[in-house]
Amino acid sequence: MMWIYEKKLQYPVRVSTCNPRLAKYLIEQYGGADGELAAALRYLNQRYTLPSKVIGLLNDIGTEELAHLEMIATMVYKLTKDATPEQLKEAGLEPHYVDHERALFYHNAAGVPFTATYIQAKGDPITDLYEDIAAEEKARATYQWIINMSDDPDLNDGLRFLREREIIHSQRFREAVEILKEERNQKKFF
Amino acid sequence: MFTTRKQYEPYISPFDPCPPIRVKTYVTAPNLYIGFQPPNLPQFPLREALMKGTLWKVFYDPYYSPYETKTKGDGS
Image (cartoon, rainbow over all chains, first blue to last red; front, side, top):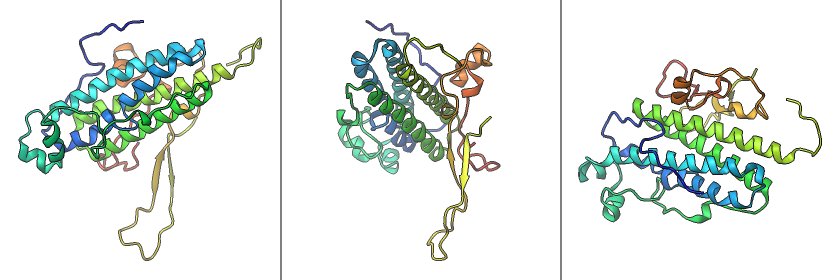
């Protein structure tokens, strides 16, 4: 397959205050264990060895995670692009600045670099889907904790959108499990 | 129907160093309750759905900081 890129964000990203500390929290969803990069790579890799009926779902959700990754990147960029080294220092970002200046990097809020060990592809469909459900719930919880730490209403608006998408993705993975559980030749009742 | 916020009262020691949080809250999102989505559920208008993050009213469960909304304080 190939991707079509639409040059706009999935949801408009607005940031009301120059607050590099929020960038430090948000980077958890960029290069953290339960972040959008981990999600996208996990689903887009697992999809090859899942039953045909649910491959399309992982393809679609994995693609959407890339759109979420782009939103997080935009938030982090906006929060840091005009910050002085002094402001970055106050926000606890001086280790980041020393290594990356204002560039984004795939690490978590504590500066731990991204690793493929965050994700799994077990080749067992139920195992993989259960991991995916857990990943969505962990990402949902992470968004809650970032919203709790943030006092930026515009930023929180975008985070609420992303959190809602986690709920929907979890729902769809749960439905995928139901599809794979289904006994053959039985009438469906809803 | 179901609620998407639950509360419990943790044990409070007389010797706790910080002022106790007497009621703890956690989220139980709609995806825990619905199973395979039934047909013909109510929808948001399309433009609204794009902003809310879901087309389906039953799955819309926004989260606000309990520290941001003084009135509720339970993340609902």
